[in-house]
Image (cartoon, rainbow, N blue to C red; front, side):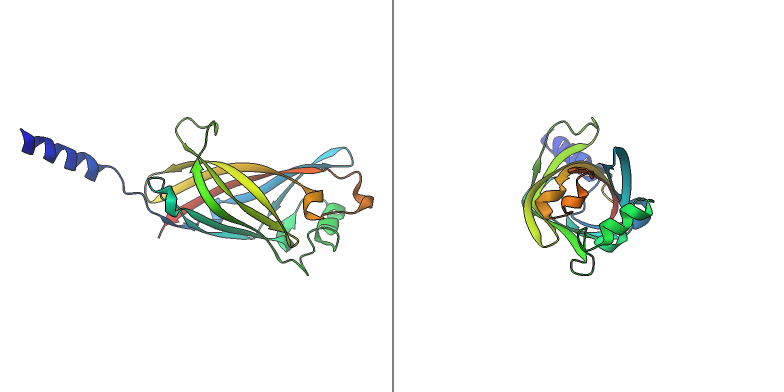
Length: 187
């Protein structure tokens, strides 16, 4: 009886997919987008160049670590005047600050991520834009089958916290919501 119980437990453990801890982003199926407002209208944009080093095993969050970036010069909204402003010295200033980065110092369980079948997590760390570092909590929903993972999250930043814009930007939104959809495969 005891042996049958051990065999049953072993079969259950072996049938659960092993969760990887090192992940490689699939750039063709991932995106970093944002929404803000300017001149009384909604502005949607995206960064076409981004990446991350991700170590994440939901069963062992003590080793979890995320280092992510967007290439600031890859911002695009489809509106030339707004793109020019964002790519200028008062905007993201890609000449002086090629990347905006996020580095986690902790990943822990969260609540209410909007997907009942996903694991809700929060990556806490530091966001650096234009050389200015601010603490940031990034909540996200994570689904994984062990070899492929999908993470969806969003966060809000205030442009003035990162010295983006000048007094002439008074009709530009103060806050921007950034949305992440990341698909990755295990290494």
